[in-house]
Amino acid sequence: MDPTKLKHRRQAYILGLAALLLVSLAPSRPEPAPLQIIGLNKRDYQSNVRSTDSAWFYKNTDGTAQNPLVGDGYYNDLEYQLGRSFQIDKVTYVKSSDIEVELEFINPGFVGHDITLYVNDARLAIPPGGGETEWAYISLSDDGPYEMSLAAFGGTDSALVTLSSLPAYVARGYLQVDLEAIENENTIWTTSGWVNWENVYVPNSTPTGLQTIPWTDLLAFSCTWARGADTATEVRELVTRGMFWSDIWNYDPAFATFWEDPVESEGEVIYRLSGAVSTFDVMDCRDGSGFNVLACQSLGVALTAQRLFEDESNQFRTNLLCGMGSDATQSENYEQFNFNYHQVGTSSSYVFDSVAAHLIDLSGNDFKEPPTGWVLGEYWQTENGSGGFWGLVYGWPSPPTVAEVTLRAVTKDIDAIE
View 1: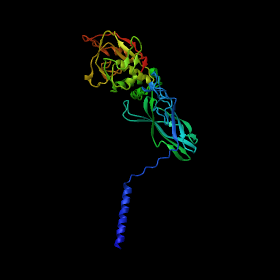
View 2: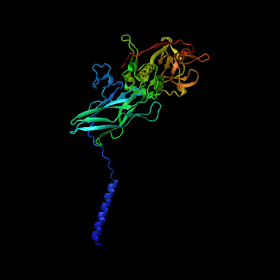
View 3: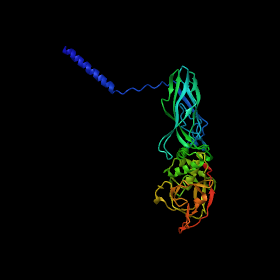
């Protein structure tokens, strides 16, 4: 063979091999995404519980600051609008409810479209918390498909999508959906698989008291602590224990951080909830019981703050307690306190104390938990059969004397939050 031709063949082979190598090393191209010919313009949830948070409490529904600051603000009723300067990413529905959301689509093009919207899948994704270490997924069924007709040049149409149904217990999670709009067997809009929409808070029943319009930054705590609860009693127990074991606040009986008792000129009990949900500071028994009351109210469950004492001018000595924020599993963290009073949450004379664990229960057994559901009188003092008492009160502080101490309980209602 002619040496010149052989040389050219070798050069072609080398070039071909190099090209093949480059192709094999190049990243594979992803499948092209479906053309988004139309757009999702609005998401408007229906039949949900009107809600707010510590920021929106002082805003108008258009997102501007109140002037003057009145403190009665709540979220705009339209959660999502394309191009708006603010969006609302939180919704509240009572347990076992259906989620109803009106979806409005817009057609910016110059050709009209008749579409069919399919909910390929929908679920509530519940993150770990409340004693659970794994994600949980609640499947939601829909009543579709949904037909819409979108005129050209900005035409809109909407469909009311019903997703059934939320869990029959307290929860919080993310609404995840997989949607697709079809025209003539072609996809013209899609979420391209799962997407997260709004955060969903699921209270036990309709929020009550000062949480009739619940704060979602409070629901973030209460729904997590009471996850899985389906009765009022369970809610009180789980919120109380959840708060105590949360390792968020530290108990200090010396002074209140968020609870403000009445002064002579005003006469109202004010609870600074904005601070409590964002400033993880110390709490005394007033702070802790007040937060417990409001957290239960956010889940639709009543709880009352009661101040317990014999005479507020005289001190009593407690049995061994461990304050919130300390490791209550360790016996060495328990101590006796000298109190003028102690404030707890109560329901029908049952006590729920979120700030102090008891070393011993009312039967003399090792306990190391905060009391939940103890009868008020027995919680105060229960004779132990050996001349002493179990429960809150040991006796007198100086000298330390075991003694029966008369109980007085005074209800302390929170008049306002801020």
